[in-house]
Image (cartoon, rainbow, N blue to C red; front, side):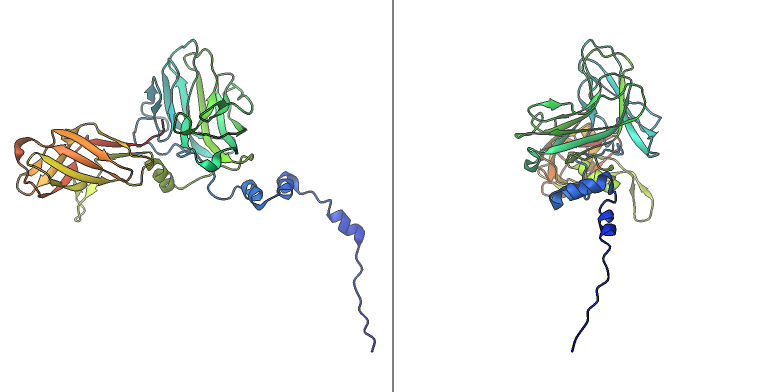
Length: 361
């Protein structure tokens, strides 16, 4: 028995022509990638931006101008304004504010604008963010990107490690128009700028500084690799948790009773009376801090403890002992009215602020 097998004709010329179809710049890059990790980086999958609060939405300190109203944050030395960001001009004074802007892409976002308030012979505008280094970052390429506009010549994106500061990429035109700037820099080993980590500066130039010189930037991003991917928009709750790792402020906030009526106090912890004049009270942090933080209070008289016999008792001095997870509030009270060993409730009144600071410096 003979079985005949037929096979459709193959148009070799047509198949060869299909190989010539354009794949575009992105497609070519994907084809040239040698490993899945390279392709992953090109796609920009996962959480990419190493910066926190890059939309400038979180300001626990409350010392910056939101949108177009209020007073801006003025600093003569390195001083944090919105969470994670600080700015200063060496030897001078700067004014920092945020405002809503529309970028050439049509995106409506907040920008940060830093303006010189004084004329200085040799200085620079210095908006910056420090971020923690990790061992995997050593000997790697990082790409910095941001929308920037300025009236000052010579501005460039800048990245510092513990050894050097680099200004890769092009100069930002000083035409006061938005420009999307990208730069790539390879960093070395032994990272830890200022003992803390990397530092990103969206713009930098030395020289004489005049009143009114400014740099404004939006959507700053720094990421692993040599490609600037689209901005990594993250949920507000995620950004707040990232900020809490470095700084947390406890203040009187609106409390509500079960009945729905507003309370006049904010309960912050429980504790116990150690002696008739001293109470020990533990406050858990919202998230684990980067290091054991510095804990300060602006006015210790705004903290009171509730003793079941003495009622609410004011505070006459304050101390703390903190680790990464929480702090003891070591409070001294007048009158020797506490009952030793008795459980206490701790509240904060209007005007009280407890700052928990583990910022990179």
